Length: 113
Image (cartoon, rainbow, N blue to C red):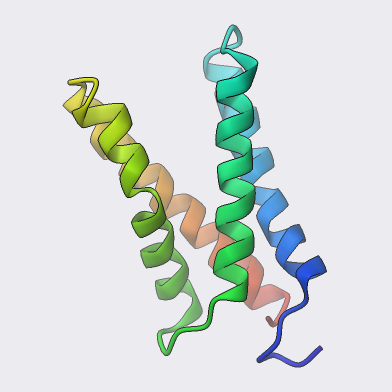
C-alpha cells in the first residue's frame, strides 16, 4: 500500500498498542475493575489508534495524532471528571491522552503510513 492509503492491518496494529498499554495500566492501578469498564477502555483505545491511522490531515503526524486523540477523548474528560465532580482527574486524563497520541503518532511515522 502507498503512504496515502494505509492498510487496515497496519491501522489495527497501531490501534493494538495503545489498547494494550491502557489495559495494562488499568489492571495495574485497579485490579478489581469491572471487566466491562476495562473492555470499554481497551476497545476505545484500539479504535482511537486505528481511526487516527486512517485519517489524513495537513498537519505533521505527531501533532495530528495528539490533537485527534485529545479531541476523541473529550467525552471521557467530561464523564470522568466533570460529571463525577472529580476535577482533579482532568489533568491526568489529558496528559494520558497526549502521551497515547504521541505513541500513536510515533507508530504511524515508524510504519511510514
